[in-house]
Image 1 (cartoon, rainbow, N blue to C red):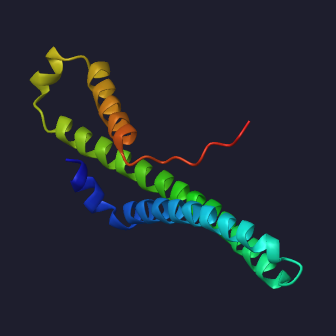
Image 2: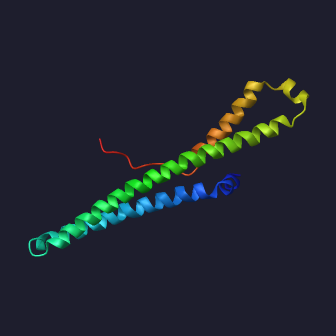
Image 3: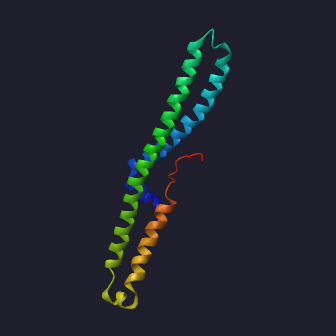
Length: 136
């Protein structure tokens, strides 16, 4: 069922996935760049360009990491809200197809609660939209 909704919004889901993967790649790359900076420090007076280059690479990777997390977060908000709207519309359309006798035996509040709970559950289990936690 979930893959059907992913198929209805493929660009948004792809952007969330690629943004998260790119952010993780930048985070891993920054760890390697820190190693490169530490390795360049002993020869810093003789070759200051190596130290500056290593520092600039770290800054660029940290900036890109933040940018990709924010891009994935922005895409996830728009995509997952659209998916939950699709779920609500589809379930409401299904309910309106029932006969009037069906609604005599079921409380309308319980039906709307089920629709909302189902949409909220899909929003909850959709691909995770997390940014790295800020240090306290």
